Image 1 (cartoon, one colour):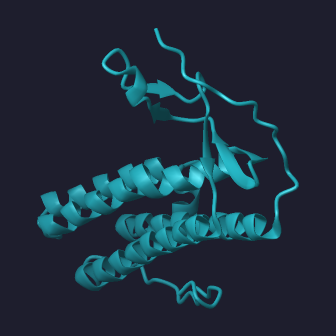
Image 2: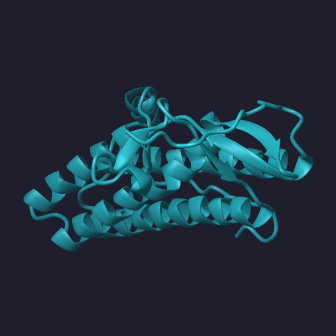
Image 3: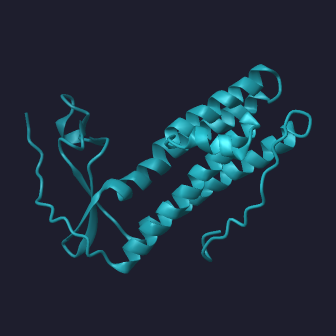
Length: 202
């Protein structure tokens, strides 16, 4: 079978400030996104916040998405939420898992190097498309053949905006569900978070 070309990747950590600051911002925004999921689970289980934190403590984002989906299904099944709520969350959950988390993970778990005057991240998880090998193979695992990707300021800002948009969508859904289910079905009352962000990242 045809072999794909590869280049030596000189792993470095002397990253420029524009990369470290924006990757750090992505990490912080991702933590808020996961917290918004915890908030939804807190709401839908209508329990003490301490219990909700215990239940979600070891959950990653896909686990939290699945849990929220199943909880919303329960409310839909019992006629307390409309099916449209479930459809909208499924779409949002898929976007987070298949797009936003993929972008976040490549930065959180990749290796960095400067090639040809430009910074790249080496992606080591998941699969990469290999149209050059079709029809024999459509994709290869990145552990088998890592994939380098050029990183720009604009690209990092787009990821930050993407994480924020998903977090805000979760926040909005939480408020909508509280308004729909409260007060007859819930004891839960959401706390007032400031959700402050850097200027330009609202």
